[in-house]
Image (cartoon, rainbow, N blue to C red; front, side, top):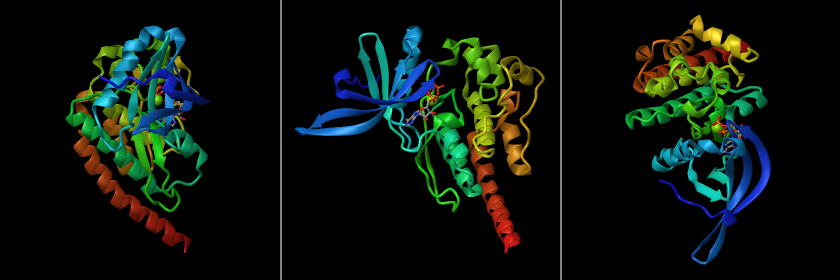
Length: 287
Ligand code: ATP
Ligand code: MG
């Protein structure tokens, strides 16, 4: 179930690019409340005309996001339909996608990254408790609502975006391109998208966050990406052994062996202590 928004109440501004079967625009939404005109910045996600057959899946993503609420989950205002156009209207998040932010920002402190990881783990825990699988977790789908001070370590604030079109509807190439975020078992059987899949994606996203927003396996063609899974490879491990260990637990090829969200959160909390003391040591060495 979701709110329907009148197409006439939407204003379209600049393009922000394309997603999986979507075109993304900044825009605004006009509401008349108590006789007053309110204008809200929004993000307009339009389903590509070539993939109209995916509308049900597209609306399902919108519906999922409207049904649940969590501070780290992106707000979806509703759906707008106009002739053959299908549009998802969502909250506009000021600082955009996390991967781009990390690439742009040179120095981001360990505690800042850990904050982001903890926020993502908390929303995953919430979804796990509700037995909801997201299915498209990656740094691109984490939006930055507050920058914090990345170099000083003051807290950022992230929001997890909608999962978009379900993997069962995407072409094989699109899914292959999602290696290493998409869990290996999903490649074999896309309908096997279960809670454990999000744990795998969380591991890949953690890797991304700690590698400056760099896409893991960037530059590999689809064939090589597939080989990566077929030969049970792991991403290059971090020097920080506790972090590397958490990532490899999440990216276990056997779904049943991946950690619970509670365990992920516990491990992230202990990383915080060792991470901060690491920074202190680094600072002391400089003095
Ligand atoms: P997918 O389903 O694969 O995630 P998508 O349709 O969600 O595809 P993205 O590639 O995730 O599209 O998003 C494209 C770009 O749009 C992002 O890199 C980000 O810069 C911007 N963007 C997406 N959602 C928002 C939002 N709510 N607020 C601000 N910017 C956004
Ligand atoms: Mg997205």
